[in-house]
Length: 142
Length: 298
Image 1 (cartoon, each protein chain N blue to C red):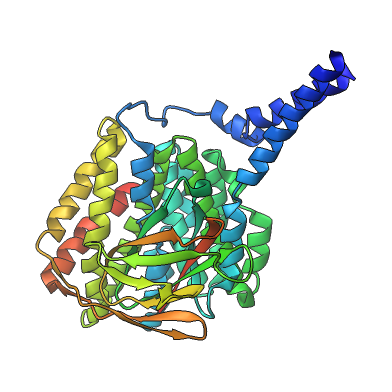
Image 2 (tube, one colour; image 1 turned 120 degrees about the vertical axis):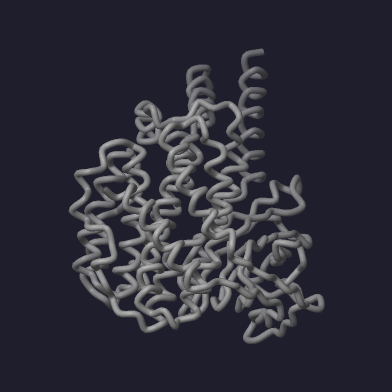
């Protein structure tokens, strides 16, 4: 009986531990890895965590005021060399899409946006399959 | 066997029960009157507005790129540190000094930068957020102008960490003050430089564009009307807003085009904004900004 209780407890503990490991998204690591990958001459501004919470979220969104005359770069980092299905899209304050990292079905890991109109922009991350976990960095240059 | 299982279970539960580091706990214990008790404040909403506010470093880069010479006289002296005793003053001037540090960094004026760094560290310690400034590393980077990129990166990361931390500790009011102090200082610097270069259209437009940022800041302050200090500053910011009301920003959307260059989606933005701002508007905004900034730093 004691043996059965002990095994049950161990199984409970180990299954709980496994669950947290499987469900874990270390987005901080990915966003930190993205900072040095900003293009030449870009100054770091922000890092963003992209955690789809294992599918519970279909998008992750941030916002920032972009300034006319400034070029911005937003990049993506995820498991493996590619973007693991993560797509970053940029919307203006009226929710018009102005940029995307998915062009004609092709995924790219960064977008360069020379801003011509100052205003609030929405940086939206969506998932096209993959692990729904990653990071991103925003940089600027003039 | 039973002891081993019990020890394992206790260890797992202890690991799961609290993610707080010792310094975080110490910080929580030192929460003072600056913590707001207003139940209507939604930290998530505030966080989403706070993230909009652009880094003052963008303006410093603009000033340098436009050929403006370094002028330390337009900054807040690092010697004013002893004047800032309340958390309200400390948070605002931490933002002010953050902008000044960014300005000295962009112009590679490392000796001045080190003075600001020291004042920043003192203010941050006073707010129990000094752990986010690795003064030794930053000081070392500041001794060599070749380290400019690393210096800018680490200081930006430090300020981002502070803002994030304050929000997670339900002290977003301090984060609002920090960003507002930084913005007012950047505004003040831009206005001073624009006054000396009245023909520079880009600087005038930059001042006009700040209308968008001020609207975000006013939105943030609307959550803290019960705080006496913040209500007073809100009144001043509303006067500044009146100065911006005459400025028209017209946005014209036109679909952008994109192409892939070396694995990067390069966008051609076909939308535009036009800013209508007169010399009188600039003068008026400069005076209003100076008045607020002087209240903050003196």
